[in-house]
Length: 104
Length: 234
Image (tube, rainbow over all chains, first blue to last red; front, side):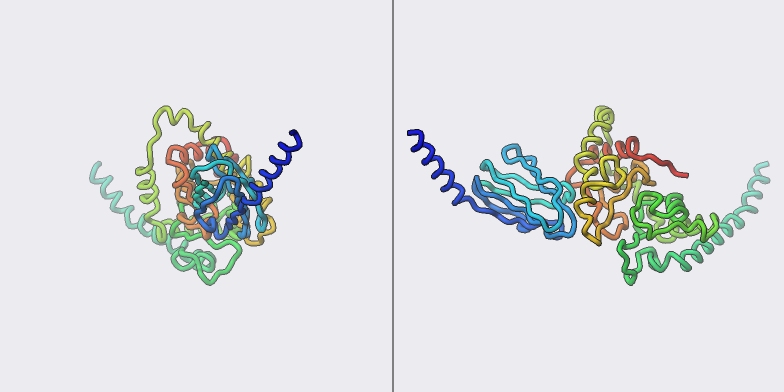
């Protein structure tokens, strides 16, 4: 019974992760490109930094709170969407950068 | 007695006007000999000048005449700029010449400055008594959460942002705020509207007006003025 449960859980995890998509957001010219996305819970968002200087993506949304920390040029940072809802992602250094996320 | 005073004023007026004109002429001469190559004919910056740091537009500067004098005398690096491109001219020109050029910049390119600053301050939100009491706490929190990323925890310009961007040869280094010449009102206006609005060549010091209201930005300015600034004007 224990083995059956473990197998089921493993299958479920594998199935979920197989369906999870990774959404690439570029940070370029002090803007998020694209500036809005629709994702599913469990999907990941990867932040590229194509600018020559650092960025720091974060959200204050309680359900999906994250902070990538200082992100150098030409590096990637990935976060996972935890709950459904709409929320904004900003850059701690460049206040005019805004990414609107709709999580379903 | 009244007639005597009146005659005395009338007697002095032409000499005051003459002194002002001669001061402006002296400032113009210095400006055209040195400053013009970077800052342009009317302080709008010379587009031909390709430098790592774009020279400031003097026709949009937030600086007062006296602050401009301090910059030309001691150089921008002394007052917190990372770059030494705007160097000290105290060994090149006399005190009189340096003040004359500051007067020339202030009266010729930027005569609207005082009114502009006053208008922007007048239209900003006035803090309530309760808000005034919490300025240090609110300002300190925002400084740590936002300003410190670039300017560093102590405001000296050594920060994680600089560390993370050190491979960028075009990096515009954040100012060392411990040495800034700006007063509290000027810091508020600089944070609210951003460096580009006040004549900086880049928008690396962004405008924070969409993110924070006047009360919060005034609190940050108060925090910088009272906790970060370490040197006073000579």
